[in-house]
Length: 119
Image 1 (cartoon, rainbow, N blue to C red):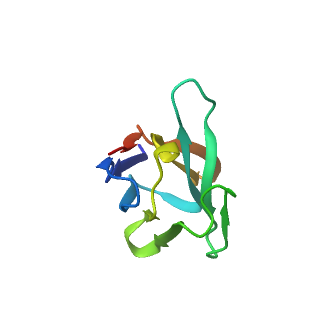
Image 2: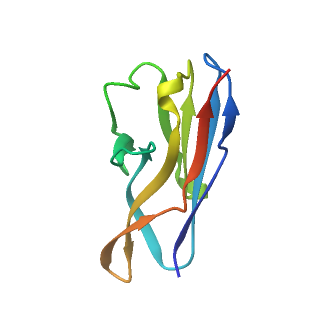
Image 3: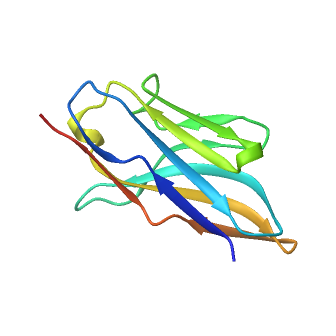
């Protein structure tokens, strides 16, 4: 069974930094694309950043220049480095993975990690 496990959320002051991690575990899978989404209270889940197996990245306009997505293929892990955090970045952040499992492309979600930006 394949799982995505996130870590790294927490409380940070405006202007601070956090790094989120998401590790894929299980057997017989390969990772296509991975990404981070977030959902603030009362709002729809939105894309934050994605990264393909080849390393191509895509960012929401609201985080460009502040957030960086990266991956360690050897560890099946994707990271989200968040700098210059703002109160409007407060949300539950979800890891997403498009994984090939037993030759079938499947979509997986992590359990979510809370990021709170407040003084």
